[in-house]
Length: 220
Ligand SMILES: N[C@@H](CCC(=O)N[C@@H](CS)C(=O)NCC(=O)O)C(=O)O
Image 1 (cartoon, rainbow, N blue to C red):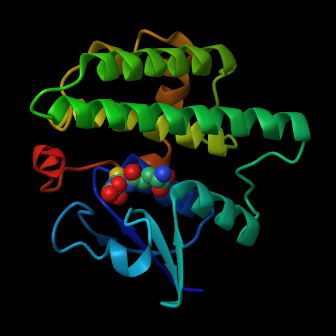
Image 2 (image 1 turned 180 degrees about the vertical axis):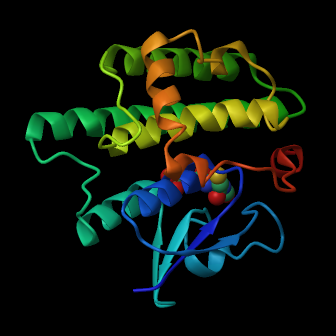
């Protein structure tokens, strides 16, 4: 099978898929795209007009990062990114879901902040949900920190790509520097976990970078 990943350089959702492909040793080409731009290719491959999109052999278009992760796990089960033990699996899936939701709420908050007149009640609501999600991830994160060569799972990947994505969004000027988005050092277990994950080859090879994205223009 030959794979092409439609991705955006700053995208935490796309990075999640790139990391899974690396961890599973699957070769792939990348095509970078800005989904909000006039020239975007996403509508050709996904009715949801979002990336990431994984294209198999130029014929199968697999979209939405959660579904792509499940697709990869079903087609390429080894090395496993979900444990086989049911309790362990459900815990990983819960951590995966929390990582994804925090990113989704953060995205909603960042877009709102780019509007000419952000709604304070919407901002407050997303801020509470992000803080609640981060506290829950901290509670569920074990005290044992994985080493560079230890097994990694979909929960680790979703949490790390989301939170590193928030850090990147602030440093790249895509997001205002909001206190609620600053997690490093504030949540000790999360910080230790991500410090261990971000030096893995799959993370180093997929570091986010800027693209010409104008978020103000997309929401105005
Ligand atoms: N739930 C989707 C979210 C993906 C997403 O928000 N992608 C952004 C780029 S980082 C996008 O394509 N946005 C365009 C749009 O929503 O119209 C997933 O997990 O794949």
